[in-house]
Length: 533
Image 1 (cartoon, rainbow, N blue to C red):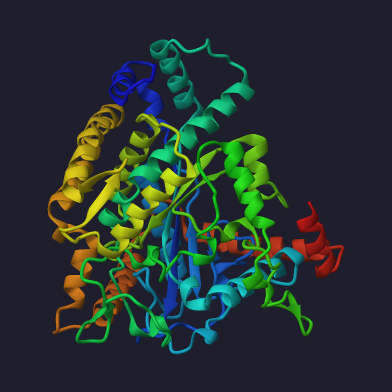
Image 2: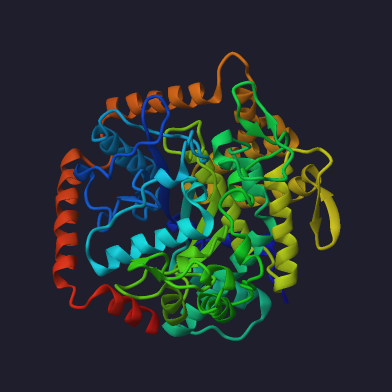
């Protein structure tokens, strides 16, 4: 017997299950390009006062020296996560000498992608490896794709929540008697997270539709490379697709055609890890042509389809905090899934943090729905069919003629969206009850309005601004960036204080130096032993 969503929700309204819903853990990783006031990419290295990018826990860099990444620790209060992110950005802006944080996912004008400076992490072997990995990304895909910014939303339920799910399932489905064994609970939690992942795959088209905010690109993004999409052009020269939602998630952006043939499925932890490990060890004829070490300089870490696991471009990932020197897939296999990482979120240009509190509330509802809704197995072929829905939505999600496939049944976005939202509303009511609020129901109502009126989506709002002939999108974006800079600098610290960031920066430089001082082998040997493990 399968336990239905309504049965789970009914059970969760009862004590002691209800309180376990308030233990949701959230962490945000927000990327942002550093730009000058006139809109050009900064060529300045990572500011020393911000700390060492290799070892700072909250302020680091992603692909490039000028692509910052802000990381909040796990918090069990959504408002706290927003305050932490605002504080991190406030301190960062105070050290940028007037530079701005570009508040869009797609980059500003880039004259020459070869001049985008790769992120540097010092002279340690692990630091060099991080830079060589980025050199490999540059050679494989080009730098333009790598300076697209996004939001990664890390989400977890508590063990008490999963114990509740286990007890409810046992009681309602007449399943085998549960055990208090920690190892068995770990297996149960991993299996349920993978059920969540499968449901996310089914319904993930909702994320770019609701929150996609990259329907257009600066013409410099293409770097004169040919493309087949039917772009139109605004008066100020931006290229756009009339119904696009998230070009960041399209083949133009944060995807990889070389990975299209990989069969990494979400049916269970073991098969997922096996698929990732297979990809890491799968040779690529295309990448072999680049070489590994050419004229004494590393061009990539290896010639496989994936240099390392981080190269796997996916809209969602199962995750586990890793130990020093440990590979992510090994951590997952040995200790199970600890949290999930939602990676399909564009930077929201209408809030200074790139993600709003209201978005977090909706994600809480959506991911809880994915965790508790029926979750039949999803083989690779079925998974691909649902991924095609995502591909359609990122390019033409607001097209009134668009039909998506739900188990071979064609559905419009209003039709399917209203079906899903009727269940999301039920989840929101239970979360409201747990948190003693109405924020969750309001969040669902707000997003449902976008299902029924595409003009309310972030992508439609941004495109309307870009098509306004009185002001260019660049002018709007720079004015917005300057407004956010002034607002954040004027605001008092809410969670941290300046002393915290100064001390953390100093400590990060010492930590990097300590890593460099303890290296005992040359870089060639280090890489050999890393991949041999």
